[in-house]
Length: 439
Image 1 (cartoon, rainbow, N blue to C red):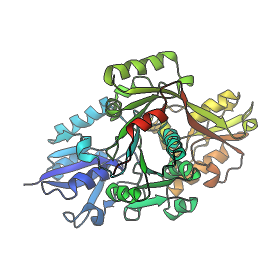
Image 2: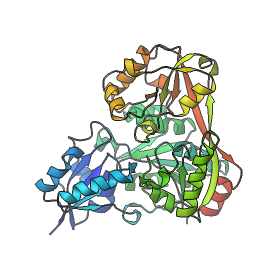
Image 3: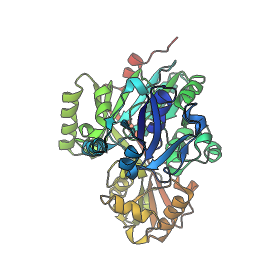
Image 4: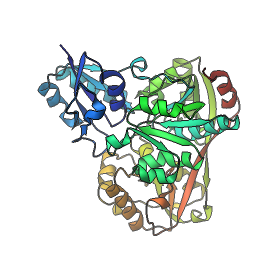
C-alpha cells in the first residue's frame, strides 16, 4: 500500500522535492500540495506533464489553511514541510497541527533532494532572507571569470506563472525577461546578473535545468532563495550570516542547516552592525560549525545620484522579500537615505490595493515600501502608491531598476550594494582550493 503524502510549500522547494524524490517513487502517493507565502499559487494544479505518469490528472494545490481538513479527507500518512525561512517555533506549531490531525511530520534532508552535477558547483546560501546572497554570487562570478572560466548561475525556483512554460528558463538578455513574462521578484534576481553578462537558469525541473547549464559552464553557482538549502550537491557551500539579526542563524529553518553544512561562512554587513550582534554571530559559528572558514565582509552601498537624497523628502522602496519573509524593518535604501540626511516619508496613508494587506501581515515594517510585484496588478499598486506619496524623490533599494517596470512621477535614485571583503582569508584563495574542474 502506498503512503499518502501532502507537501507543504510556496511554489519552489515543494515542486523540487516532488520532482527528485516522489515523481517516480512507487511507494508514495502525493495527494496534494499546500501553498502559502506567495499569492495566487493555491487553486491551481501541478500539471500532469510535470507530476509524472503516476498522476494523470496532475496534483491539486490547496491553501495551507485547509491542511487539517486535507489530512483527514485524503487519509494522509505524512506531511512534508518544503519551504523556507520559518522560525523554529512556527515549524513546531505546524508539526503539532499535523500530528494532531493524525499524520507524521517530516523534513527532508539533502541526500534525498540534492542533484549531483558533472561540473563544479558553488552553492551560495544564507541563514535568513536578505543576508547578501545575490551580491556574493556576483562577486564569485567575477572571481571565476577573471580566471577565464565560463560561469552559469542557477537561481532558486520562483515559478509563479505558467508552470508548463517555466520548466527550464534561460535568461541572457532583458528581452528574455519579457519573453518569459517574469514577475518583479524574479526580475529583481535576474536583472543584475544579466547586466554583468551572465547566463541565468531557473524554472521548475532542476534536473533539466542543471543538464542544460552544464553544457555551457565550467562552473555553476547555485544562488539560493530565502534561507533554503541547495538543490544541487555543492563542491563548496558558502553561507551568509547577518549580524543585524544576531541569533537568527540558529533559530530559523533551514538556516541553521546551512550554517552547520557550510565550508565557508561570511559574516556580512560588518560596518553597519553593532559589535554585540557581530559577537553573537561569531560565537554561534564557533559553537555550531567550528571548522568552517570565516570571512568578514561589508555590503558596500552606492547611490547613483546622491543629490536626490541630500536633505530631501524621500520615499524608500526596499527589497520585498528582505522585509517580508526576512523580517527586516529596513534595508539598503534606508541606510543610504540616513547617510544623506534625507527625511523618510511614511507610505501607509497612500497604500493601494493588496499593499494594505502586506502592512497588516508584517507590522514590523518601518516607514518603507516593500517592492511587491508578484502580478501585474501588484506592480500597478506599487506604482500608484509611489506616485501618491508626497516626496521629492524615490530611493530604490531593490536590485531591479524600478524605471523599467513603473512610471514614476518623481525622480528615482538607485541604490546598489556589492560585497566587499574585509581582511583575510579571501574568497579567491578559498575557491582555488575547493573548486577543481571535474573530468
